[in-house]
Structures are given as structure tokens and as C-alpha cells.
Image 1 (spheres, rainbow over the protein chains, first blue to last red):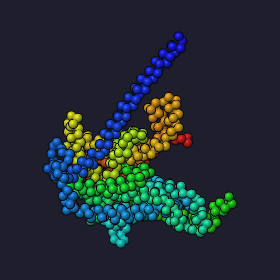
Image 2: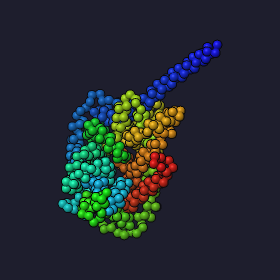
Image 3: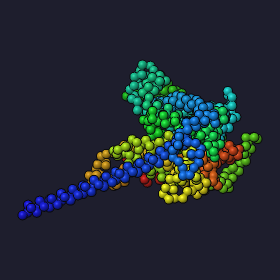
Image 4: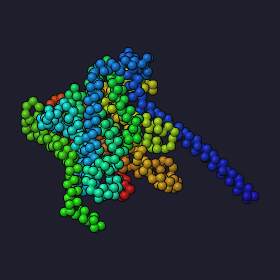
Length: 306
Length: 303
């Protein structure tokens, strides 16, 4: 008697547990689908504006200025792309941008690794104070420097010619480690390199420059690649400084195509969209070619906090 | 030990050489800071007290610029616009980024696709995204009005109505939340599994684990994103210049745009310098306030 009661109670409990489990499974199925739905919706919202630009870059004006809007071109008009080069000196802007990018990357790598080595591996009086100063510069709003720098590049820095209008105001500061975040990133990496390597080299009579060049830089390849991408991305994107320091013949893509946008707002969206797609393309290529370094750089620096 | 003592002694040749090399290697920064940061900031400070229009030599005007700052309604308007934009977009953006990071931190199917898709707006150059959104918000031919019409909403002239312009900017800003999401995702890797398991053993459900373990552990990362976000968003410039030129009726006249105009369109360089110092002080104050209050909600394991 007692045993039957117990077993029936047990069966009841088991059935109850099974029902609960089924309920939980159903709940988790629903919540999983909910998560997918949400993520899918957000993904679409992230992608659609960009896809709309690309699709519209292949339309005729008459397909753009219609309501309700048409999402896809009836027949893709590839000729919109050659047309942008006739509309504005896009290739000139592109090469200007590349020149500034290449020199900026060089400058950042050279100066930041020197300074980072000093801040991570050499002990000298005042080091902590200056490192604090370096970190503080990251908080400085760029605009406060732009007005006086504009005056400086107009009236003081005039060798070999006036700096305003040339690439120099954008390139030269990059050779002076004025961007705290880059120095900080390399310093963090250098701190992780074992002291023994350095000591052994010093025993053999190597000076700091050789140690930096032959030991630290080869070991820091990942952070260097990250820095190349970050600097490239920053310079490629930069708008305010090129706008102030450059002139129409030295304009970068960002500044140059903005002038075109103003002129074409009322009439030819497809050309502006084609130009936008043209400017986006290098970023997409770099992103997919070096996704790991790209995301790492952004993560480490908190960049894109624009 | 003895060798360590020797090498740290100030007078030893090794030590002298290390100090010398230390300064030499740091020289690019030391010189760069003096020439490209300290000197311009000092100049901006001097400009504060000058009237300078580039055509005639600068003239000392004492406190005129600063008193003008207080009396200029556009300064208050632009400060308000900037604060409205930053304080609306940063929390919303961080909340969305955090939710996405938590969802993507689970082993769900298609995780890589979602992550790439949500990250995509980050790689769009700012100027290009301004082109896209300027047209996406177009009253007649933009996709925003098209999409909201599917849900029965009437079309609006987003960038042409003063009350809607900043919300439109905020939405555009939230669109680019990939950076913050990726930073959160990296932070979530550091949430100790032991703690989550211990909480589960104590009977905590997913929700409790989230609020009582994940969120507290993540507060330093949230704090970092908050500081960087406020500093960055207070300097919004390009979208306003490109999409609205500060309009309609100065609704998107942000601080940096107003400074830019004073300096390079109205040629009032002294006044622009004064305004940029105002912005700098505002940003510093906000950062200090955030650090002051951080003790109340940011959790550090070492405490």
C-alpha cells in the first residue's frame, strides 16, 4: 500500500517535471526565435541604408525621384561610375588622400614606437608626468587646436612654402607622436615583451635603438598592423582638419566629394551615391581583408567613437 | 640584487645613458607636444583676449570676447543642441550596443553574420554616411518615410523641422553602434564563468544572472564607453555641416560648427578661440563629474 502511494506520487512528480521541461523547451524556442528576429531586424536596419546607396548609384535620376520609391534599378546604369570622374576631379582627391594616408601611417609608426619604447622600457626623471600628459591629450577637443594651428601654419610655418594649402599640416604632426592613443597601444604591447630578451641584447652591447629595431618591432607585428589600419581609417575619414588646412587642388576625398554633394543635392543623387560607394569601397576591402586587426584596433582604442 | 642596485644608481654610466636615451626616444612627443599642442593652446588662450579678423593685426579687447559669449543667444542654443544630442545618443547607443553584445555572446546560429552586419555602419566614412542619411530623411524620396508609411505613419520633413532634426541625428548616431558593441563583446569575455555558475547553483535565472553578475562586472567597460562617447559626441561636426548646415532655424547648430563658422566664415578668430575654450572647459567638467559619480556605480574587482 505504502509503496503504491509512493510510486504514484513519484509518477505524478515525474509527469509534472516532464511537463515543466517541455514548457521550458517551448519557452526557450520562443525566446531563441525572438532573439533571431530582433537581431535580423537590427541587421537589416544596419545594412539597408548602405545597400540603398549602392543600388541607387546604379539608377537613372528618373528612378530616384519617384514616389513610392523604387528599391532596385530597372537596368543597372554602370555608366554612372565613369560619369563621376567627369563631374569632379575624384581621382585627384583619391591620390591626395592616399599620399596623406601613407605618410601619416609612416609617421605614426616611427614616432609612436620610439616614444612607446621610452615610456615602457627606459626610466628617466619626469617619465610618469609626461605619460600622464600624453594620455590627457586624448581628451582634448580637436577644434581648440585648429584655430591657432591654422594661424601657425599660415604665418609661422612657411618653409619650404606656406603650409596652408599643402599636405604638411596634416602629415608633419603625425611624425611627432601627437596622437596619444597610438603611443598607448604600442606601449601596452611593449610592456608584455619579456625583459630577458632586452637584457641579453644589452649584455651583447646593443643600444636602445638596435633593441627597438631588431627585437621589439619584429615582435610587435600584430599591434603594428592594427595601427596601420587605425591610422589609415582615421586619416581617410578625417573631415574638419583637411577642410580647414587644404585648398581645392589638395583636397582629400572626404572634403572634395562634399563639395560635389552640395552641388548635386537637388539634381543627381545617383552621382553622389556612386561617389559615396567609390569612397566606401576601400574601407570594405580593408575590413574584409584584415577583419581581425580591424576589429581589434577599434576595440583597443575605442575608436569610431565619433 | 647588487647588479640591479648598480644599474639604478644615478651616477652609473649605464644609468646615465638610459636617462639620456629616455629623453631622446621620447623627444618626438616632447617636441610635438610643445609645438603642436601646448603652443597652439597658449595661442588660443591669448586669442581669447583679442579681436582678430586676419585682415588687420590683432587688437586687444580684454574680456570682450568672454562677455560676448555670455550674451550671445547662439552660444546657448548651440550648447543646448550639443548637450541634447550627446545626452540622448550616448545612453541609447550604449544600451542597444550592450543588448546586442549580450545576445551575440551566446552560441546562436548566424552569429558571425549578425556581428558583421551590425558592425558594418562603422566602416562607412562619416561623409558618406552623411550623404546617405541626408537623402534617407528626404520628405519625398527618402527611405525613412517610405518605411514608416508601411506602418501607417504620415511622412515628415525630418531634417527640415526644428523639433525633429536632432532626433533624426540621434537615430543616425545610434545606427553606428558597432564600435561600442565590439568593446562590450570583448568585455563580456572577462565575465568569470565561475561567478555565473555559482549564481546558477544559488538558483538565479538568466535575468538575475544578467543583472547581478554580468552588469556589475561590465560597469568599468560601460564607464569607459560613456566617457569616450560624451567627449566624442560633444564634438559632432561633419554631419551637421553636410546635411543641414546647422539648420533648420539653428536646430542643429552644434558647438563645433558654430566655432568653425566664427573662425572660418565670419573671420572672428578671437571669438572662435574663446568659444573653443568654453567647449573644452565644458568637456573637462563633464568628465570630472562622471568620474566623481563613478564610485557609486562602477565596480572594480580590486576594491
